[in-house]
Length: 105
Length: 457
View 1: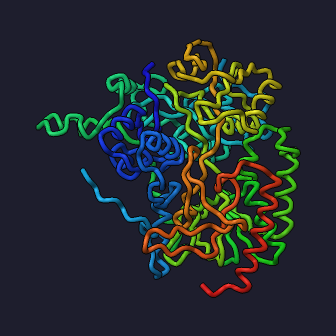
View 2: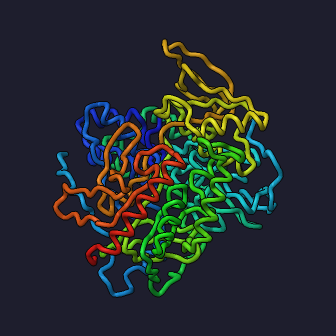
View 3: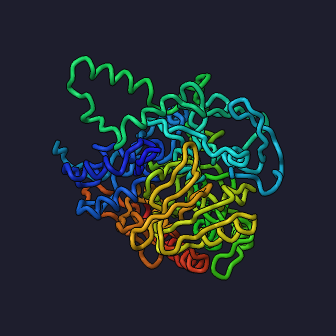
């Protein structure tokens, strides 16, 4: 059996990868998410975000805010989403409300 | 020993799991039926093809995603079993039990850094990319194209939308009805009760019998005329503050409310140890829900709190330990040690423990159950403009004494919802029926006043 500790099941991100990425300078929650891919899978962070934020914070990184909450928070068939904008109103799910930090890569 | 049923299904139906007829309960989920037949491995992970089993049984993990009647990625923990349903494992090459791509896991012992791996090497880079596309991902396309079910999204008008049908949401909904307000209550499960449904039968919480308290709260909601929408998952907020929910048969519905109460509860904590994703590792709430549905997750069970950020057993862990012992299982509750790793090929076979002095010991077991503080389900409230506070458990939604959400003020473009309230575990509060009940009364008084005297939106 392998010795992996998974921090994100949906995207198969390991604790080792997360710690390496923090050490490499991805020490805020948005950059860390973008680099490792945690929280970008099926569950959208329901399983992993709290643990990843705790580890980041313990390592001195910035986890004061969660990464931007973007709907849908639950998988919805595209066929159903397609019906949303047909009422003629301004449709589309709300844009991000938090400014996205500049990518320092 | 594999999981087993503790009682016969109340309403037996037959489902077909990879072609094998399997007894299921029409009152319970597909996932619990399969676990009850002795199988913990329901899925494979997308990159390493690691075996996966249900961890949360609450629609918050990847452990029960299966293909049901030709539709990929169905969360089988949220779907009740129906007669003749065809359920298949996905993401496998060769066979579910012997997936050849499992070898990927051993080739990359520390994980796969896709930023560095073979990047920039001409030729090889493209070969690896093609390989990765072939082996990774979740499921395959549906058997048939799903036509859009709706010409347009229907709109429901109400005074208040309450999101979450657990204790907090139920109390809030009936307290708001008592103020004469119209209320729509959405919950993503087929039954009301939220985390109360993750207690085994006969459990106690504080001074309350959980089942009696849940029945009374549900009765009060139904009698007061709350418009209850089950299997209705609220998934986002539109421009103009319309909230949307998705329903497996009705499609998407828009709710236009004058005020919103988010009582979405908490996500399970994440246990951190080697092999933490192995089938047989599950939360106390998941194991409690299984037992409620007549399925015991193992005969020899280790119950841990430290690896999930807890210091002592919470109400779900205590209730599960009692009920599992009552059903004949041996339950070891770890006190001065924590799980360091779990071993097993397709499911948990043994566990390595570390005590306070760092000494290791090993024992055989069939299941590792973890219990710790839940991570508040903040997503919807934050999208609607609520502020949060970060601590070890996660991001709790900040509220005032009347449960009104504190508005996030930092981003310039925020348009906080003046009538946004949050109640229950989403605020970082521990599950406490009496406390939630009195908060719900204060919330209802404040919200009713805001709607009667407040400025128009």
